[in-house]
Image (cartoon, rainbow, N blue to C red; front, side, top):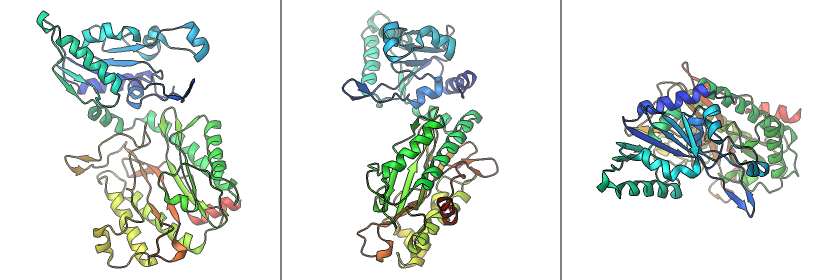
Length: 437
């Protein structure tokens, strides 16, 4: 396990240090999800639950009780069951939760209705993320109502409920050295996969064949799953932000946009590259591509401590608007066009998002209604793009149906930033040379 038991314990300690005295935090695991009759989707643990424990089993509940003499870290989990394990694989069991995951105590999940109300009783505050799991929300309220029904006998229901997300997600926003090692490895695997499909691409292939090449490289490198459904959009499909059909034939003369990243030990990578199906950019494609690349490089320059979250986006907007005016897709004063957001028909998303255990990772983008200041340890994507609708008759025909996005994973460092996915070529010259080779 790349994240040590010591680090998981430190994370729990850091969270409990933020909790009020005589409080309790409750974090349920993810549930197994049915895909169809008798088959389930591959299990993926809830990111908050995993961040605090490293436990990768469903039907589990993590409980934190800061200051409790008899143990602060409790787990409810499935019991060992030889018959079930014969069919579905091993279980850790309550004893294993203590031995392998550092729980102070662990109980069968079937006993939670008997034990957890006693842990809730008399607590000043309950930290829980209400509204994310309706079934478990109902269990929580049933336990609280049971305690309320016993007030006449001296039972004390918990005082207040507080959303756990803000405190926990603030901790998750800043990546540790161990997390960054995993994310750099995920970035290495992902960039290698992008290079592989660039080299294999030929006119007449199908989008799903490139997707298969990505997945093969992910799996062969130890990252069994993609961090999100891969986007492989040829031609005008690249103008669809979340295109995942990946079913069309790739045509000679088109570009193909690939937005794909692997997940390694629950940590995500997220990379986009756009390249010509036949290995050579046309003049119009090259002009738009170079513009997007200039915007991305300008945005990356703004990723450094002391700058705020929106400065990279502002930089990308300025460069793209200037370029669209120079190329004749927009007309007017650059300053006025930026103010009017005239670029939005062609650049409708923001320049990036946080990255970590989730592809769109947790963390506030604003603090006290002001854009958040960037600090070392934060990881974000930088991904400007241009998407010219195929039916946009206001622009010359040569631009229509072209979609371009360039995305890298960027770590804020003490000195500035580190582009963790820089190995995937992104200049037109580098791309053409790689595809020719």
